[in-house]
Image 1 (cartoon, rainbow, N blue to C red):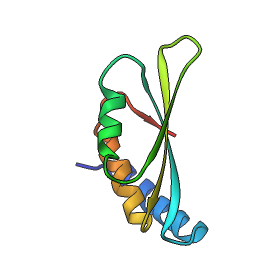
Image 2: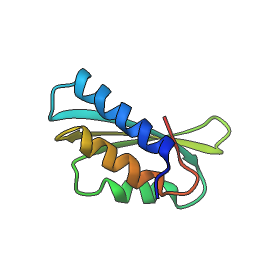
Image 3: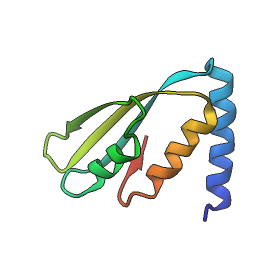
Length: 95
């Protein structure tokens, strides 16, 4: 269940997205995950069949991986829906 802080964040994000983009639009997600573990595959699975372009970059010491995802979405609600799905993946930092 979402807490009040998360609800407020997503409400503000929805307003910002609606004000700054013409929908449908491409959206860039950026996540940081541990390089070893299932998180990269889990995130990629969330974006399966969406036409997303996913790019991974391993940190200089190899401990973390940056996952960048560009995907065409229909509205701010679709953006937030994906953030909520990814937030269920353990150890993910959303940027």
